[in-house]
Length: 183
Image (cartoon, rainbow, N blue to C red; front, side, top):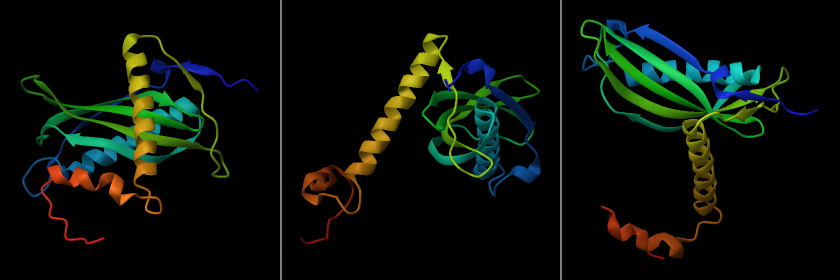
C-alpha cells in the first residue's frame, strides 16, 4: 500500500495559555519544566494529527531558554512537522510570550521533539510523508535530516564499547579540564 503524503500545514497546531502565579519557580518566573510539559503536549498533538496514531516522545533536542516568561504573559506555542522518517517525526516548536497590556511579543524558546507513531498494540507504525511547499519547509526538513545524521554519528563515535580514547583525547586540550586518567 502506498504511503500518503501531507502538507506541513495540515498537521500544524497552535496553543495559547495565560501564565499564572502557580506556574512560577522560586525566582518568580515561569518554571521551565512547566513550559517543557506544554511543549510535550503540543508535540504529541502535532505528531498525532499528522500520523493519525498515538505518538510517544523519543527524544527532545536543543532546548534553549532564550528569555524568561513572566506571570500574566500569554504564551503561544506553534508546532509543525519538520521531518518524517519511517515511523518517526521531528516536531519543531516555537514558544512566544506576549505582554497582553503592551502587545510586545518575545521569542522565548525553540525546540525539536522526536515523536514515534504507535499502533493499538504499541508497535511502531509508518507515518505519512511530507509535501514541502516552501523554501522554509525545505530548509527545516534538511536541517532536521542533517541533525539526525550528526546525532547518529555522535552516538556511534562515543559508543561505550567502541570509544577510541586516542582519537579524542587531544580535544580536551581546549577545555577547562584536568585529565588525571593514566592509560
